[in-house]
Structures are given as C-alpha cells and as structure tokens.
Picture: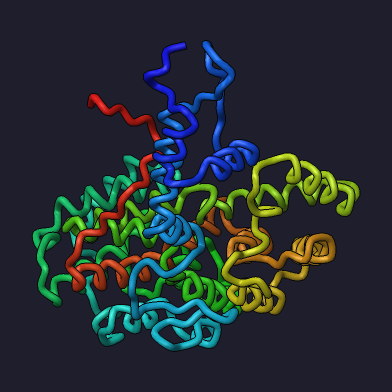
Length: 411
C-alpha cells in the first residue's frame, strides 16, 4: 500500500486542527475511516478524505452550513418586497392572498405585483404578434402537451417581437402583458383575447357555471406567487444574466413542470384514481404509507404536508371550500374530501395547493392537466414580478459550491 496518499495519525490530526483523541473519536463516530499500516501496527488515514473533512469544517466556521440551509427551506437568500409567507399566511405586497381570492382577478393581482395600474394590464394588446402566424404554430403543435407547446411557442413569439430586449419601464410592461397572454393561449391552444384569464380558461374548458368560473379565478389568484420557490428562483437567476423576459419565463415553466413542483398536480391526480379504485381506502393508505417508510425522505403523500404551512396550506383551504360550494350534484367531491380526511386522520398532514388544484380538475371534470395549467397561468404573474425586481437589483446571482471531490496537490 503506497503511503504517499495517506496520512499518519499525527499528520491527519494536524491537517484537521484537532488532537489525537478527537481524531480517534471521529473514526469511532464514522466521520473518518482508517486502515492498518502495511509495515506496522499504526493506522493510516486517506489523505483525500481528511482534506474533504477539513474543508467541511472550514465551511462550517464560515458560511457553508448557512448556505446549505438556505437552499433547503432555510433562511432567506434574497431580499424581496413581493410576497410574504409567514405565520400560516400568504400575502402579496402586504395584502392577504386568501382575501384577494374572494373577488380579485389575475389581472388585478398582476397590477398589484407589477406596481402598475389595472388599466395598463387589461388594455394591453390582446395579440402582440400576427394572428395568422400564431394560429399556424398552434396547428403545428396541436398534438403536444400544454407545457411542451408553451415551451416552444414562447421563444418563437419572442423572436417576432421588436422590443423584447428593451429595458424601459413601458416596454417591460408590454412584454409582461404579452408573456402572460401568450403563455395562457399556448397552454389552452387558443388565440389570445382581452378577456380576463379565468374567463378564457372557462371558455376553453366549457365551464359555464358562474360559481365554477369564479373558482377558476380564485385558483389563478392563489397561484400567482409563492416567494422563492424553485421555479421563481430559476426565473430570477435567468433574469440576473440579462436575458429577456420570455427566456426567463420559459425557464420558470420548465422548472414548474417537475414532479416535485407544479408537476405534483399530476401525481395527485394519479392518487385520486388509485384511491377511487381501492376497495378499502384505509387499507390503501396504510399500504401507501408503508411503502413511503421504505423510501427516501419526502412528502408522505403527493398533495399533503407543506413545509411552510405546518398547520395547513391556506390556499388549499380556500379553494376546497369554494369547490364544495359549486361542485356538480353528481361529482367525486365526496371521494376527494374523504381522502383528505383519511390522510389527516392517519398522518396529521393537510392538503396543499397541488391537492386543491387537482381536486378542481377532477370534480369539475376539466381536461387532464388542467390543474397544472391553472398553476402555470397564475404563477407567470409572480415570475414576471420577480424578474422585474431582479432587473432593478442588477446583480448576477452566482452562489458558490462547496467542493467535496478529490484534491490533488500536483494539479
């Protein structure tokens, strides 16, 4: 065994800045490994492993541990005046989102978050590029999923807009309105109109009941922003590089589609299907929970338990209450609520926004994927607000990594 890549006990202790008894304690606790010396009774310590541990200790004294917590439901990483999540509440620029959801439209929330007049949003050009061109694109991508269609058509539209790179406040608002309308139109495969977003969705999904249409409106409002979630942080990172709004929003949409973010609505829809087919709901849940215990840590079940809301997601409470008021006479609402109650009784976990959106899709009989569309069409408003805020900040978001790989002195 060559000893050049190994430390003696004294050398390892010196590299770590600790005493020999502490070094032996590290080994006993599994923090460090040792091997017998080939020509004696002493122990040797892998030099690369010792150096990695030394770097971790140094990071701990500086900001390594803080940075790790920052990226995992931890301390704040950026300053923002847009959204506050605290004490079980969600506030948009100081206004309770649940209260806003009772009457506000998504366009009014956009005006609030973008700090402009409602008229500036509602009277923007309904179709910022040629209708014939847009219709041709829709036809070409008609067989795609809503998210794939939007990911293709947003960059395509950007290439046809002359002021997409403009930095003036007026041009930014023009682009913001264009992004909001085009993303929604791409996802529901229509030509944009000046109608409020919830009415456009209702028309596309053939929702004619006023209360149900109002429920779609409330869902869009409650989806509008949620502080620095993965997709919003993605939008801010992309914006900080100086790229245009269409590119940043496309990046946010790609992040949102992941199954651990907005794509979780698809997993909740699958959960509804499985639970509906189960002859015994309690036994079904017991089996699902037993499987969870054997897997890596994560949510107990898709659509339940939000880390920022230990007492329950207020967005889900509002939407489920509104859904109960307007559900069709013959609908799976009872099964949906029974599942939520059974999970609560078994685990204590409460429904999240993803659960509520999937419940709306199922109970109202909306097209498959409508829950994700609601999420994306609402959230684009928040992405735009964060992009504007990041542009004003002007700094590049560039965190550092904590290297834990091999280290070679001769490199």
